[in-house]
Image (cartoon, rainbow, N blue to C red; front, top):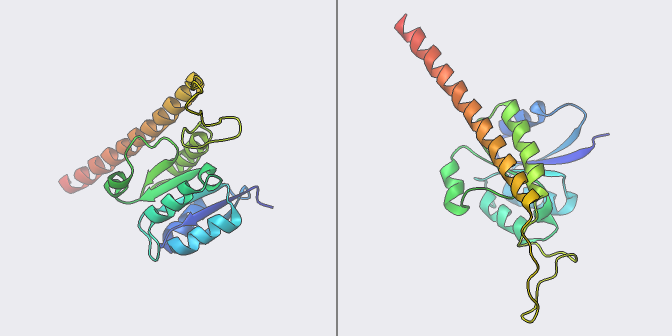
Length: 188
């Protein structure tokens, strides 16, 4: 039996299959949704352990799905990996750094996917000022706000950013090597 449910919301069957094939076998049950409407229904019904969300989707855009997930206190605690072939479309709506979810640019390799998933799980555990829990009541105007600075959360966020930058560096190195190989072939 699979340990965790991963919901892949992407209109490309190729991406959905590729994600399924890149995950370690036996550890995950992969659910697939082909559009934003179906994906949001899966999220609400299945409460997956991880959501992989394409930003450009039919019927209901990834941006709309993202906003509806963020509007629900329970759903926004689910680790999230946003996917897009054009990062600038994401950053037009959501400014960087992405503190509470991970972003992966398509196309991606297995290591990038695994790193993004690990980072998403780390980021999901970070305390969120926009999430109010019973342990963290909203101060009334007569109450002095409690000290909320958590150095361990800062460190975790920095580690997540470093991991992301390292993955980007590795991707760039790979691209440079591919360009070099291409140029060498053309010069022969």
